[in-house]
Amino acid sequence: MKANRQWMLRLPCVILLIAFCAAYQTQAKAWQRQSEENRAAAAEVEAYNANILAMQAQLAQEREAETAAVQKYADGSYTASAMGFGGQIEVRVTVRQDRMEEISVLKHDGEDAVYFEEATAVIDRILAAQSVEVDAVAGATFSSTGILEAVRSALSQAEEGT
Image 1 (cartoon, rainbow, N blue to C red):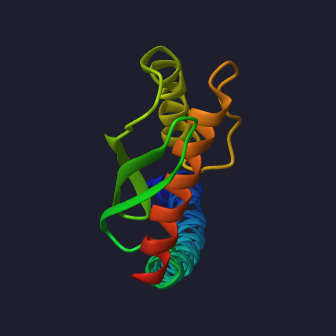
Image 2: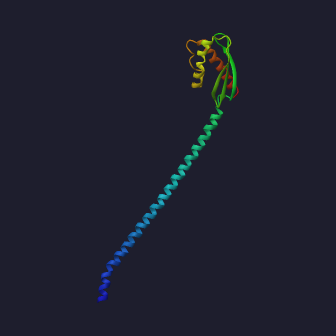
Image 3: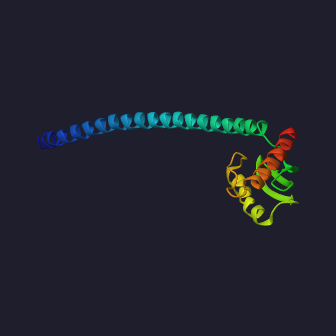
């Protein structure tokens, strides 16, 4: 009877142990299933991100090709002249990568030195705007207009070079 009694006392512990193991096994399977779902979702996100990166790279290449194809001015230095207040004004425009890098006045014979010095302020305006569509310098209108027209003529040469 004593052996039977010990077995009866241990039976609830064995049942509890079996129930605990079964519950743990069920939970472990649920964790494994969730882990597999997470891995699958992560792989899907990584594939999606890789696809986006590939599309961005392709767009960047297309934009670069489009930019190269649409270059307005050919690189180089171009010389042109136009009439100022007192005579011809000759300029040299240096173009690199579709931008005016430098504008130099080569000749300005016949121009009044004081007015012409004021007129050269238009060069900074042209370079800042990267355009000849800027206002002439007040007080030196004819001289600055001569510079503008000479630059415009040099840029038309750069356009023909493309």
